[in-house]
Image 1 (tube, one colour):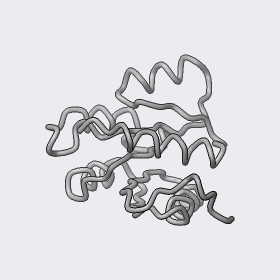
Image 2 (cartoon, rainbow, N blue to C red; image 1 turned 30 degrees about the vertical axis):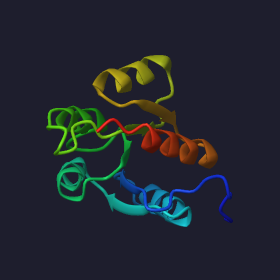
Image 3 (cartoon, rainbow, N blue to C red; image 1 turned 60 degrees about the horizontal axis):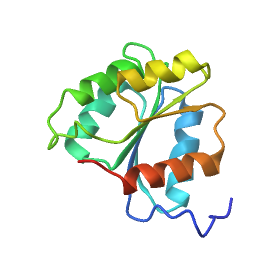
Image 4 (cartoon, helix red, strand yellow; image 1 turned 180 degrees about the horizontal axis):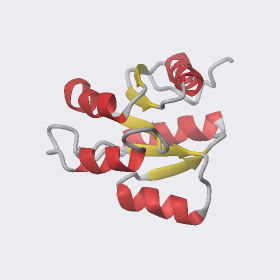
Length: 136
Protein backbone atom coordinates (compact mmCIF):
# COMPACT_ATOMS: atom_id res chain seq x y z
CA UNK A 1 0.00 0.00 0.00
CA UNK A 2 1.53 3.30 -1.03
CA UNK A 3 0.41 6.38 0.86
CA UNK A 4 -1.78 8.87 -0.99
CA UNK A 5 0.05 12.22 -0.92
CA UNK A 6 -3.16 14.05 0.04
CA UNK A 7 -3.81 11.84 3.05
CA UNK A 8 -1.18 12.70 5.65
CA UNK A 9 -1.58 12.00 9.34
CA UNK A 10 1.92 13.11 10.34
CA UNK A 11 2.19 13.56 14.08
CA UNK A 12 -1.47 12.75 14.72
CA UNK A 13 -2.11 10.54 17.76
CA UNK A 14 -4.74 7.92 16.89
CA UNK A 15 -6.13 5.53 19.50
CA UNK A 16 -7.55 2.37 17.95
CA UNK A 17 -9.63 -0.13 19.93
CA UNK A 18 -10.90 -3.43 18.52
CA UNK A 19 -11.16 -6.84 20.17
CA UNK A 20 -10.38 -8.55 16.84
CA UNK A 21 -6.60 -8.83 16.59
CA UNK A 22 -6.52 -8.85 12.78
CA UNK A 23 -8.63 -5.69 12.55
CA UNK A 24 -6.53 -4.02 15.24
CA UNK A 25 -3.27 -4.83 13.44
CA UNK A 26 -4.63 -3.67 10.09
CA UNK A 27 -5.90 -0.35 11.45
CA UNK A 28 -2.65 0.33 13.31
CA UNK A 29 -0.65 -0.46 10.16
CA UNK A 30 -2.91 1.75 8.03
CA UNK A 31 -2.61 4.80 10.28
CA UNK A 32 1.14 4.31 10.82
CA UNK A 33 1.66 4.05 7.04
CA UNK A 34 0.18 7.54 6.73
CA UNK A 35 2.38 8.98 9.49
CA UNK A 36 0.20 8.74 12.58
CA UNK A 37 1.43 7.78 16.01
CA UNK A 38 -0.83 4.87 17.01
CA UNK A 39 -1.86 3.25 20.27
CA UNK A 40 -3.71 0.00 19.56
CA UNK A 41 -5.63 -1.67 22.38
CA UNK A 42 -8.03 -4.61 22.45
CA UNK A 43 -10.48 -3.59 25.18
CA UNK A 44 -12.61 -0.64 26.19
CA UNK A 45 -11.00 -0.52 29.63
CA UNK A 46 -7.52 -0.23 28.08
CA UNK A 47 -8.83 2.44 25.71
CA UNK A 48 -10.33 4.45 28.57
CA UNK A 49 -6.99 4.39 30.38
CA UNK A 50 -5.11 5.37 27.19
CA UNK A 51 -7.42 8.35 26.63
CA UNK A 52 -6.45 9.78 30.00
CA UNK A 53 -2.76 8.88 29.94
CA UNK A 54 -1.84 9.29 26.26
CA UNK A 55 -4.23 12.10 25.24
CA UNK A 56 -4.89 11.00 21.63
CA UNK A 57 -6.18 13.35 18.94
CA UNK A 58 -8.78 10.90 17.58
CA UNK A 59 -10.40 7.66 18.76
CA UNK A 60 -11.34 4.93 16.28
CA UNK A 61 -13.37 2.29 18.10
CA UNK A 62 -15.12 -0.93 17.28
CA UNK A 63 -18.63 -0.96 18.72
CA UNK A 64 -19.17 -4.65 19.44
CA UNK A 65 -16.69 -5.81 22.06
CA UNK A 66 -17.04 -8.17 25.01
CA UNK A 67 -17.38 -6.86 28.57
CA UNK A 68 -17.71 -3.19 27.64
CA UNK A 69 -18.82 -2.16 24.15
CA UNK A 70 -17.92 0.96 22.22
CA UNK A 71 -21.08 2.78 23.27
CA UNK A 72 -20.27 2.26 26.95
CA UNK A 73 -16.68 3.37 26.30
CA UNK A 74 -17.64 6.63 24.60
CA UNK A 75 -20.18 7.43 27.33
CA UNK A 76 -17.42 7.01 29.95
CA UNK A 77 -15.09 9.21 27.90
CA UNK A 78 -17.76 11.91 27.56
CA UNK A 79 -17.99 11.93 31.36
CA UNK A 80 -14.36 13.07 31.62
CA UNK A 81 -13.31 16.69 31.82
CA UNK A 82 -12.00 18.40 28.69
CA UNK A 83 -8.45 18.17 30.09
CA UNK A 84 -8.85 14.42 30.63
CA UNK A 85 -10.07 13.88 27.05
CA UNK A 86 -13.84 14.20 27.47
CA UNK A 87 -14.28 15.90 24.09
CA UNK A 88 -12.03 13.53 22.14
CA UNK A 89 -13.22 13.24 18.51
CA UNK A 90 -14.45 9.67 18.07
CA UNK A 91 -15.34 7.38 15.17
CA UNK A 92 -17.42 4.23 15.61
CA UNK A 93 -16.49 1.33 13.33
CA UNK A 94 -19.08 -1.42 13.15
CA UNK A 95 -20.57 -4.13 11.00
CA UNK A 96 -23.97 -2.79 12.08
CA UNK A 97 -24.78 -0.51 9.16
CA UNK A 98 -28.46 0.29 9.64
CA UNK A 99 -29.61 3.87 10.18
CA UNK A 100 -30.74 2.97 13.69
CA UNK A 101 -27.19 1.75 14.47
CA UNK A 102 -25.75 5.03 13.20
CA UNK A 103 -28.19 7.05 15.31
CA UNK A 104 -27.41 4.93 18.37
CA UNK A 105 -23.66 5.52 17.92
CA UNK A 106 -24.16 9.27 17.53
CA UNK A 107 -26.46 9.39 20.56
CA UNK A 108 -23.85 7.56 22.63
CA UNK A 109 -21.29 10.26 21.84
CA UNK A 110 -19.47 9.31 18.64
CA UNK A 111 -19.24 12.04 16.00
CA UNK A 112 -18.98 9.60 13.09
CA UNK A 113 -20.26 6.08 12.35
CA UNK A 114 -18.54 4.08 9.60
CA UNK A 115 -19.70 0.62 8.54
CA UNK A 116 -17.27 -2.28 8.14
CA UNK A 117 -15.73 -3.12 5.84
CA UNK A 118 -14.73 0.52 5.66
CA UNK A 119 -13.08 2.10 2.65
CA UNK A 120 -9.50 3.04 3.63
CA UNK A 121 -9.59 6.46 2.01
CA UNK A 122 -12.92 7.26 3.67
CA UNK A 123 -11.56 6.27 7.07
CA UNK A 124 -8.33 8.23 6.61
CA UNK A 125 -10.19 11.31 5.36
CA UNK A 126 -12.62 11.11 8.29
CA UNK A 127 -9.75 10.89 10.79
CA UNK A 128 -8.05 13.90 9.16
CA UNK A 129 -11.24 15.97 9.22
CA UNK A 130 -12.01 15.09 12.82
CA UNK A 131 -8.49 15.95 13.95
CA UNK A 132 -8.65 19.26 12.07
CA UNK A 133 -11.89 20.22 13.79
CA UNK A 134 -10.85 18.97 17.22
CA UNK A 135 -12.97 20.61 19.87
CA UNK A 136 -10.85 20.20 22.96
